[in-house]
Length: 192
Image 1 (cartoon, rainbow, N blue to C red):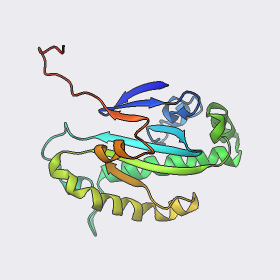
Image 2: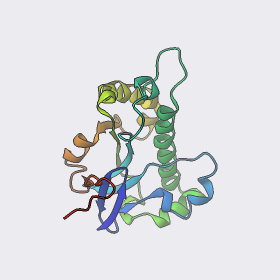
Image 3: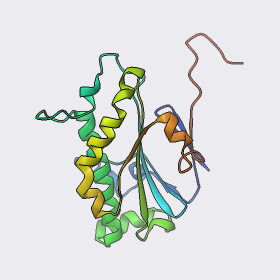
Image 4: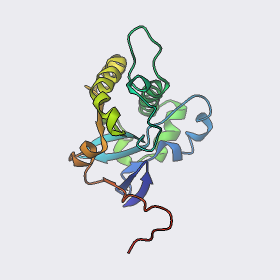
């Protein structure tokens, strides 16, 4: 297992069956060209799971639903647009690999053998939000899937699963690989 810690979560991902696009040599030259990637990718039951995680629990209490969920006749919040870009760009990179274009061939050479040919995709976003923002998860999920509807149809995905961390780590697709990190102790206090 390969172990990662990010955004308050621990990931125990299967050796030879996971990857991080950010670590791919073929991705690095493009990362400064307005190309984004989702955080973690792994094979689970012959499907490629693509997961983005964000921990907003330590952010200011000033955040409100409008910082995440688009409102009618208003510009989209940048956090929302960032999620759309990360999902779209990750899908484009996978499709480039499967199309066999020169850049895609380079990417595929770095990926696990199980995903070098097209496979079914699972797209998910896990968010850890302060309690006052959790009420917006449903609206955010609806808005995200509405914005991505056409793109998802192109790759054979019905919807992006957007959920809080507790739901994420309880689902069978994620629970074998993802758990919460133990909370950090305040400065000056040592664990046993």
